[in-house]
Structures are given as C-alpha cells and as structure tokens.
Amino acid sequence: MSSEATTPYREQLAEAARFLRDHDDYLVVSHVTPDGDAVSSTLAAGLMLQQLGKRYVMINEGNSPRKFDYLSGYESIVNYSATAVDRTFANVISVDCADFKRVGTVSKLFADEVSLLNIDHHPTNDAFGSANLLRFDAAATAEILYDLACVIGARWTKELSDCIYTGLLTDTGGFRYANTTPKVLQIASEMLQYGVNGNELADHLLEKLSYSHVALLRKALTSLAFTDDKRIAWVRVSAADIEEAQASNEDLEGLVNYPRNIEGVEVGLLFKQVVPDRYKVSMRSAGLVDVSAIAKSFGGGGHVRAAGCTLVGELPEIVERVVTAVAKELS
Image (cartoon, rainbow, N blue to C red):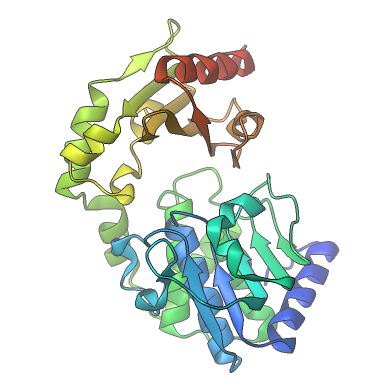
C-alpha cells in the first residue's frame, strides 16, 4: 500500500479488511453492463475472499464482456438478466458502483438487514454502504483493491495480478489518460513481476477490433456533428444500427473517443439509443469541463473526464439539452 494514503483512507481499509474477515457467504456485485474495471474488480474481490476461505457468489446485471474471459473466475460471474437467483444475501460487496442505482436489479437479492461494503473510485459516489472504501483520486477500483489486498496480506498469484493489472490498463486507456499516476505505474510494474503479460493484454484489450465494432463505427461516423466553434462533437447510434452491425455492448466501447480525439474538440459525446425514446449518453472531456457534474445534473455520474447518463425523449431534444449544458460549462 502506498505511504501516501491518508488517515481516513487507512481507517477505511482497516474496516474493509475486518468486513472481509468477520463475515461469510458474500455476494460480490458490480455495476450494470460491467466494463473492464468492473469485471476485474469483481473477480479480484472473489479471489481475495477465496484466499480467506470465504464462500461467495459473483452476480452482475448484464453480460460480462467476452474479451475478459482470460481472467480467473470469469465463467462464475452470474448474469442476473438471464439467470434467476432464488435467495438473498446478508453480506454484500459492491465494486465500481458510482451510486446505489448502478447496482441495478441485483439489489433485489439484498437481505432486509444487509451489511454492504461499498468499494469505489467515482467522485459521484455518495457512500451508500454500511461500510465504505472510497478513494476518488484512484485511477480505478482495481487500484483500491490492490491496497486492500496488501492490508489483508493476500498472496500475489498471477490470477489476482491479472485482475488488478486489467482494471488499471482499461481505466487508464492503456496508461495514457491523466489518471496514470506514479502509483498506478508502480502497481503495474509490480503486477508484471508476478507474471502478468502486459504486451499481450494491451494487444488483446486495446488493439484488436471486432468486425461488428468496425461496422458500428462506420455507421456512427456518418452522424458526426459539431458545434459552430467545433469544441463539442458527437456521434449517435440507433438501435437499428446496433442490430444491423450485429454488435453487442462491448462493441460500443471506445466509440465516444472518436469525436473527443478530433483536434480542437474539448468534449466528445455518444448518444446510444436503448429503446425508441431512451438514450444513453457517454461524455468524454479533454480536461476543461467536468463532465461528471453535467452527467449528475441529468441523473447520471462518473469522473471529471469520463461520465454518462440516460435520458428519455426525442433524440434532437436530448442532443440540444446535453450540448447546451456542455457549452454553458465551456463558456
């Protein structure tokens, strides 16, 4: 664990370690439609519980992206959208959930008097757990789980190291984003010493593109639009586009970066149609705009540079509302 940890964070780590040691029969859950940090943090928590000799079940709402199937325990994550679970859990660990809503329908499995350990790095997290392990300057929830693993004295197996490295790699954009701190690189270096194959994971997670992703990208780029000053750019994908491209949720990953990466653009947006009158909005900032604040104003959340929300209505009206809010922040 880094010596830079503040006293409150150290106290939270100690409380989280007690939570893992003092209970049994855990539910580990992450956010709906889990991403790389969510999947790897779910599995890292499971591996840590396994080392402590604890019973646990891992359940998320939505499919875990297939590209993370190399992680130990991947096949054991239950997709609650497709599999019924006929029981409740008194001890729950949530990872990478920016707020309680992000747990989704899995919250139906929580016992009435649930004890909930909330582990997260999103600034919009409101400490919804009965115990909370929060560090908003962490690059990924996986970074917090690294600290927790050190506190409980976990063995650094290759399987656990792969999980921590994967969470860091994906949430820092391959160690390119502004959240790539010296501590992140120190942890990554340590994980490499435990057998992680960094170049293989970078190639697999960041370089390889599926045909369906490329097909969807072609459709998205035909919708590329800008504000007059070209500081805000956006693309949209309809439900029909997704169906025609035979794309899954993981094929949408990274689409929002295309408008954001255009020279001069401060904020890139992606409007994804979920159902006819519902759109998921992804936001990426170059740094001048806190998109988490904008997302929160629309009922969403996230990070300063990466956030999202879901809005109901007609697409032109939704685009106007979001672009107006971003433009106001830019001005």
